[in-house]
Image 1 (tube, rainbow, N blue to C red):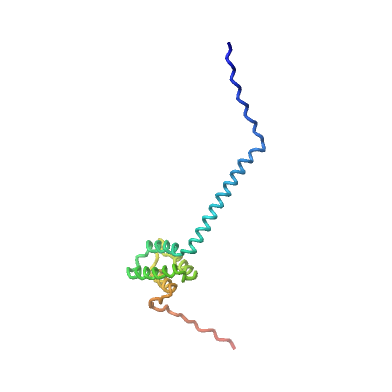
Image 2 (tube, one colour; image 1 turned 180 degrees about the vertical axis):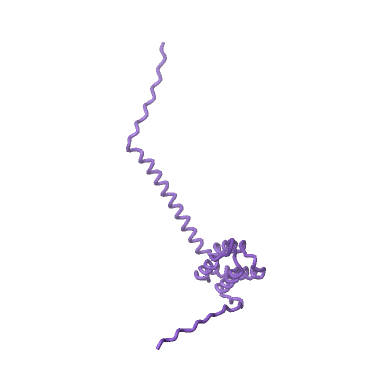
Length: 155
């Protein structure tokens, strides 16, 4: 007796040349979804920073405190910390305009050698924080005013 012959598996379907676009379509859809997630995260970050601007200034202050120049005294450091506490409170209460933040960035851009924050920059930041928080800035020596004579009209 002969044993029954098992059925032959069906042959694989031939690949049609136009069918490979299905893979690319799935890749593009996946990339689109990933892009939408990234945009949503970015918008969320922007909204968070608008509600809590002190988050950015806290990071900046940590950098400032870790890069003091050797000429910055402990008194200057404490004055800056005190001024920043008042400034941060004003930020939380949304009493600070954008202009002091721009001035803070301008002050910090001009760092010294090895990205050090000089004594003058610390004093400028403390004054800026006090003014932005609505407090009076501590009395400092006035900067010298150089006046130039106005030109006389010729006859």
